Image 1 (cartoon, rainbow, N blue to C red):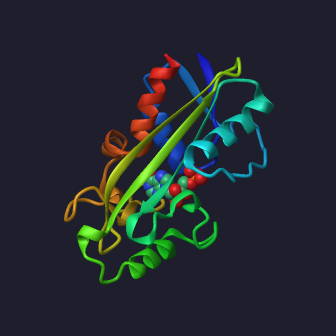
Image 2 (cartoon, protein in one colour):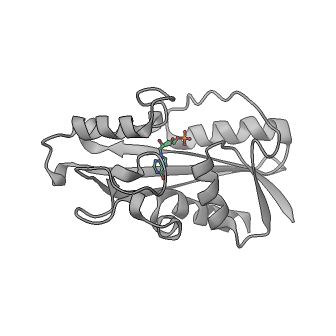
Length: 194
Ligand code: IMP
């Protein structure tokens, strides 16, 4: 079985990635599994550039097939914040309970039609021979009025695909992967890997 390194240490993401790539002939290693520890400065202007920065940083050490994603939440009413700063919003170490509560507070009084938001995911692959491809997908939805559900991670409890529907935090792993920015981007990337 071939190996690929997915350049992330986020356990929530690795779980989703392994589930989508399960039917492929690849063993998916996290950076930790591969024993790679590199400091990566995610200073790109957009999701695609950050994904490429991460994939190249790890490829330059491993010289093998490396995939990396960069993802985040864009909230239209907040000028697309937190965007590329999604994991750094209010500080890396601040809990998502606090971050999500802050976003709900910032949107207090904003009607549903102005609460539109999207998750964005760019995935870059750098192949062993140095070829590089990037894909980008989104999941469009709304920021609800309350946090709900224990599944998923990050901003999932406040993100709703439809007003009045289930939050991402209430979706099963399979449902989320079918609908999500990352699930769709991984499917697009699978085509590139074949
Ligand atoms: P990255 O590791 O730089 O791609 O940071 C992505 C950040 O965006 C995560 O730490 C979360 O805050 C947020 N995010 C990305 N995808 C999701 C998702 O599927 N659900 C919830 N939050 C997400």
